Amino acid sequence: MSQQTVKVKLVKSLIGTREDHRATVKGLGLRRLNSVSELQDTPAVRGMINKVSYLVKIVD
Image (cartoon, rainbow, N blue to C red; front, top):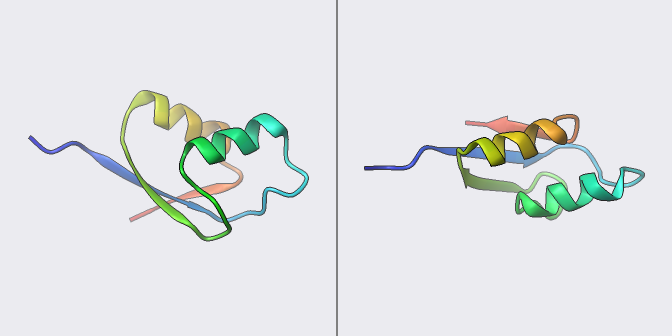
């Protein structure tokens, strides 16, 4: 039984963004611009992605 995953990419700089949004991006495992992280597709992760949707992009 394989777990569904989602790949997220940081496409916008964190400069000038809210502190809690920066913490959310860090929680998604993203460090610098254009970094990609593969995470399990859970409601919690989806919520984090929605919160910082203007900074990240879901990639295939």
